[in-house]
Length: 189
Image 1: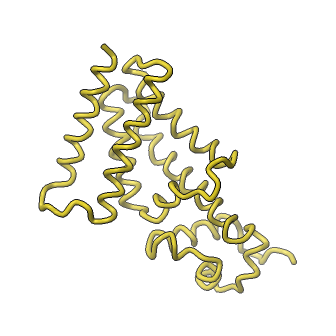
Image 2: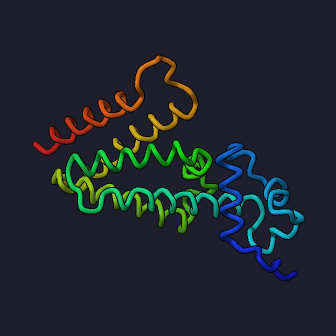
Image 3: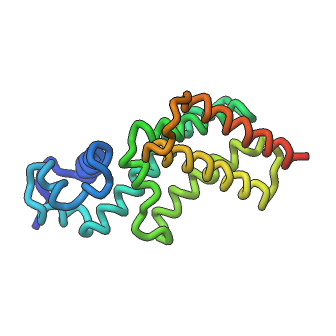
């Protein structure tokens, strides 16, 4: 069976992203996607390898979107300023695209080379940003893991309504990043 004219990978992934962002990642099924595209579910098999294939492609799409939202904010910046901009862009991505953000964390097979490749690009970007602190080898990886943990923890708690007190979340976030940067400056010494 040949692919339907006008239906392509980009359209499928954009539609899946829309469903994920409005209804949650769990709502992205072949049936829901086909319904939204006004096609029969079997037509999707010309473009994706079942639900697992769709989830993998959506995870890669989401990771690419995250990478593309992080990269421009660090260009021309270094040190604390670059870290702040990277951190803000990360949380903004999670806020603006909650379903896609969830997809970045739920790749069906994290050992898949395509998933690893885009994930590696995000790690390398973060290492590049942290180079200003002259961290080498393992210290750089520890710093990347720490930053990712902070950003993911904050974004996830915010998405799930985990911050119940009526305090300014952006101020909390700024203080958190400042505390992280204080630790990074100590690692450098």
